[in-house]
Image (tube, rainbow, N blue to C red; front, side, top):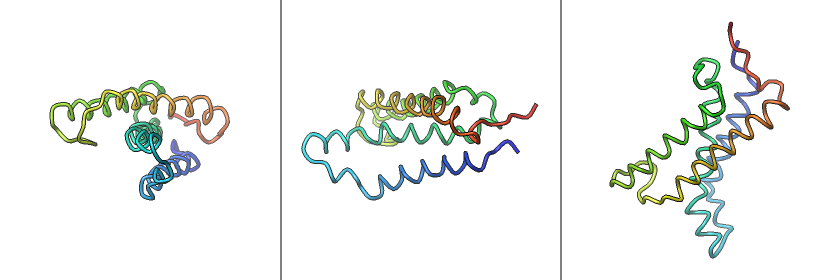
Length: 133
């Protein structure tokens, strides 16, 4: 079986954590500029991070998604496309175009790739997907 239960549990844990941070509005603990920065850019950073790991579940079934840069690039392109749509008045994942959001998308996707390649792959035995021959 190409899907590791441990890997799926890790990915689900990441998704649930991100959802809970948003649901319980943890940004309320901040004030002043930190509050504004959190509510302006936190989601732009953490959502691509979470979406990257959703793609890791499918890398056994979709060979093009196996390299980290394919997953990071896919997430970045989709997020950036949504931001460009906002520039033209199409409300996708937000309302207001902000070019800094695009930087945050890239940072979130790259951090996810780093965690995938440098932390999970070498230290979590079940993370490495066994690809069928």
